[in-house]
Length: 336
Image (cartoon, rainbow, N blue to C red):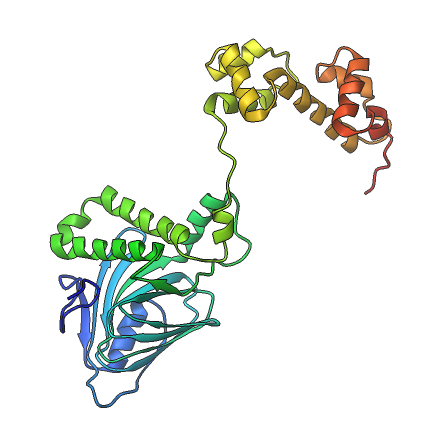
C-alpha cells in the first residue's frame, strides 16, 4: 500500500476529533464554523452520509482531516480570507476554482484561491488532508520575497502533483507534518519553534515550488544585498551629505579599513566612497534646483552648501552626470 492511499477506514489526526455526524445540515454548519459559509448537498442516496472532521491548530495555520462518506456537492463561493490546500488520501474530487478545473486524487492535490469562486464534488469515500492558510500569511511572505507589495491577488495553479516534480516533495512535507502530529500527539505541538519553522517552510515552499502569477518575478535573478560595511558607509553618506566627511570617517563608521571600504565600493557599487559621496551631493543639488522657486538659492550657494569649493569643476561634474549645466537646470520653467 502506498503512503498516499490509506487503507479503508484509516484516519489522519484521529487524536484530534472535532465532530462526526450523519446529518448533512449539522456537518455543513460545523464545517462552516471552521472555514466559511457554504452549501453542502449530498447527491448519492446509495451510500450513507457519514461526515468526520479532525482538526489541529498549529500557529498561523491549521491541519484538517475531512470526509463525508458519500458523493457531495460543496459550493463555498469565494473563500475570501484563506487559501486551502486539499490533499486527497483516498478517492477523488472534482474541483473548480475560477476558470481552472482539476480532478483531485491521491496523485493530484489542489489549492483554492480565496478571491475566485469555488465549487467541488467530492466522491464517495473521498478523504482529504487539508492545510488552512491565512491569506495574510501568504501575502506577507510574498511581499518579503518580492521586496514590494503585490498589485494583484496571488493566484495559484489549482493542481499540485503529489507524485512528480517540485510539488511532490512539498506534499510529502505536509504529510510528514501530519505524521508527526499523529505519532507524537499534542506533545509535539508544544515545541513551538519547531512547529513555527515547519509552518514557515511550508508557506515559503508553496510560493517557491508551485506555479502562480508571481512565479516569474520570484525566480528572476536578484542583485545581491550589499555587504554590511558598504551599506553602513552608504547610510552614513546620506545622513551626513551636507557635513564635512572624509573617507576615513566612512571607514570608521563601517568598522573596516579605508582600503577594505574602497575595495567594497569598487566591487559592489562600481565606484569609490568619495565618488559615491560626490554623486550623492550632485543629486541633492539637482533636486534643490528643480524644486526651488525662481529667484531662490543661486547655483553657487547650493554648490558650496554641498561641499563643492571649485565652481568650474562642480559644473563639469554636474554636466557629466545630468547632461546639462546647473544654470540650465535652474532656468527650467516650473509647473504647478
